[in-house]
Image 1: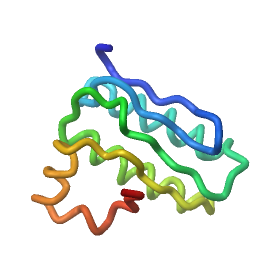
Image 2: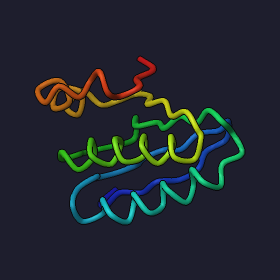
Image 3: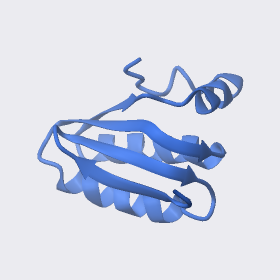
Length: 102
């Protein structure tokens, strides 16, 4: 899949798919903000398993969604962070900021 997408999935979660880069970052942020605000669940998770490629924009997106979740009184958990994103987060000291499930 070229380009990225964010969609709601059953069980109170969101799922990121495809390529997460500067071409889709702002659009995904807006979509995430709307989905978080509309969610009835207090605890929301975001599954990153289907991300095929990500620049640092993907990490920025996750941090923004974390802030958006807090602003709406929700708790966000990140699942299945790809190894390349995990390595970038580790280099920049962001791992401790991300609420990782794994």
